[in-house]
Amino acid sequence: MSAKKPVHELRLGRIRAAVWENDSVSGPFHSVTLSRLYKDDSGQWADAASFDRDDLPLVAKLADQAHTWIYEQRLAAKGVAAEEAAP
Image (cartoon, rainbow, N blue to C red; front, side):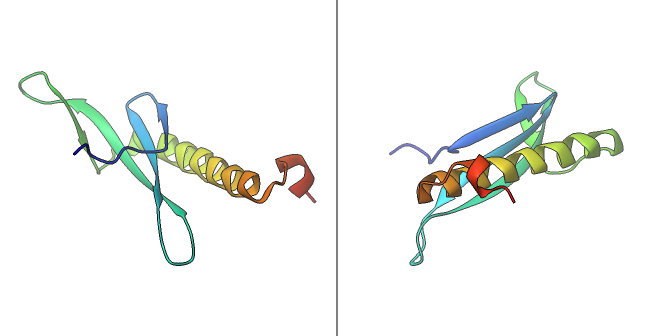
């Protein structure tokens, strides 16, 4: 049995946003995890859920990009183009 994978990933430098699709009785919904990639003492890639001061602008940008992607997916599921949804 394989582990569930994100439906979409975004990355800026060492900061990553993973978008997950989840099922509920009301239908599918998305959630986002944010992580910072780093190499551990043995040289293996690992991730952490804490961020340095200089990471925060990238976290904010990725959160915005993830929001936009999820919004566009919801519109597409409804059959509405993003341009049509704009005021």
